[in-house]
Length: 83
Image 1 (cartoon, rainbow, N blue to C red):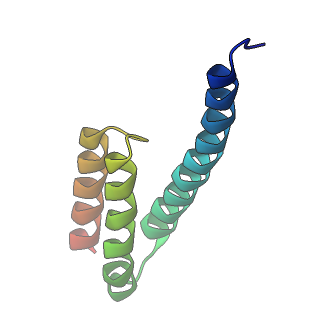
Image 2 (image 1 turned 180 degrees about the horizontal axis):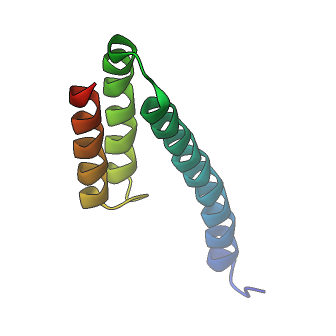
């Protein structure tokens, strides 16, 4: 266990951030999964901007790497264009 007040506070804040990051990451992965399962092009086109925004936010907050976000966005765009 930590001995300093600042270390105890850091442990608390890290736990809070970890839970929030985990929630946001899981929500984005579920949205990606739903988008990939869609068969209708119009539905996919309406859902694509929201998923791209979610990926950008994850990359901005360093939850995922910016290149991973770029690769995922590119793959999704290719998928939607091929429909």
